[in-house]
Amino acid sequence: MRLLFVHQNFPGQYRHVLKSLIAENRHEIVFITEHANEGLAGVKKIIYKPHREPARETHHYVRSTESAVVRAQAVARVCIDLKRQGFVPDLMIGHNGWGEIFFLKDVFPQTPLLGYFEFFYRAHGADVGFDPEYPSSSDTGPRVRMMNAGNMIGLEAADWGQTPTMWQRSRYPASYRDKLIVCHEGIDTEVVRPDADAHLRIADKQLILTRADQVITYVARNLEPHRGFHVFMRALPELLRRQPKAHVVIVGGDDVSYGARLPRGESYKKRLLAEVGNHVDMARVHFLGKVPYATFLKVLQVSSVHVYLTYPFVLSWSMLEAMAAECLLLASATPPVMEVIEHEVNGLLVDFFDREALLAGIDRSLTEAAALWPLRDAARKRVVERYDLNRICLPRHRAIIDALVAGKSPVSRSERATPAARSNVTKAVIPGMENDDASRPLTIGQG
Image (spheres, rainbow, N blue to C red):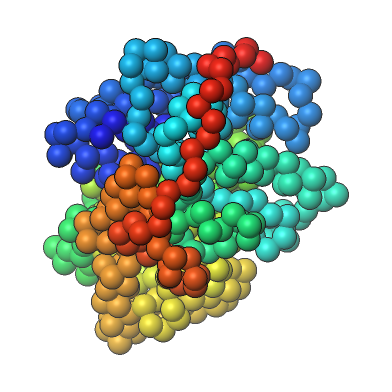
């Protein structure tokens, strides 16, 4: 097969499927990206560069859309060059978040396009307006509506869409859900697993933590309100008072992944430390920043209780990895979490804003550790059964690819019938979608 991948940050969500394709040594794979973060033998990477940033005078509602169009133009020009060199893919696969897939079908109209759709923004019922500390304004609704312009363009451009969870799929308009296949990228449960002998070295404090210690862990890509960092930090003074032997390990960067950006030089970590730092024993609170993956796994493997808080938003890989490592999860009772965690079955759930419930959950996790051990077993079992990379998710992803290359639907009629069934992928049995008009001109303007 000839396959074209597109993602702003190589390899993005496609690391595992790329490796499986490369291992077969019979596919030609081209990957268009803005940031080639690493090498991967067997993949031809092409770097694109937007020719400009959004204009300063562009209305702030549509600045992100203009940025997406500029990126889409740059990617389309790369594709035109590929086509002139004789490369016509059998399938195109790309993340829609930065607009890069908008114009792919205008260059390769006969080639099916599988888009990755992560989140459809809404002014109500998801992350926006969820936290009263960051309230909506009269500007919020129109701004959020326009944030979905790229979502709508991508949904119309793609033949099929992939999204990682049922809840994320449910955020998209009902009229598009039948073309969205639920397929998580997967957790490698052979790599992410418990280790009774694990130890975590805190180098700057000459400290080694093991499973014999009381270790409370918190992980996020960046330390910010969307992942409940402010809630967790404000609980620390009382948490440390109640648990005099406990250590708190916090992993995450100081940037902002989601929500409004802060002024230059500011971070939520700085703000929260200024607020509670005088009441926190910093000898027992360990900020590790962003860490190598091996260190991240050790954090999970020594954890006594892992706190995961999130707005109703995209579910973090780290939560599933924590479950796979047999952590005891204390998580927010928000919809993306509740798709995976059942209270008292494979984890403990608390209200996102209820600080006392969070503290009580941590107390219980430390004092009733033996009694709660079955929840750890059940957490790993849930990930193995639903999100295992090699047995569930990668075969599912490959089945989607094979079906689309064969010109067929990646889901059967029966799978379309019920929401639960739509999370599965089987052999293609439905005729493929009609191809677009092949007579479009290959001219991409300079906007």
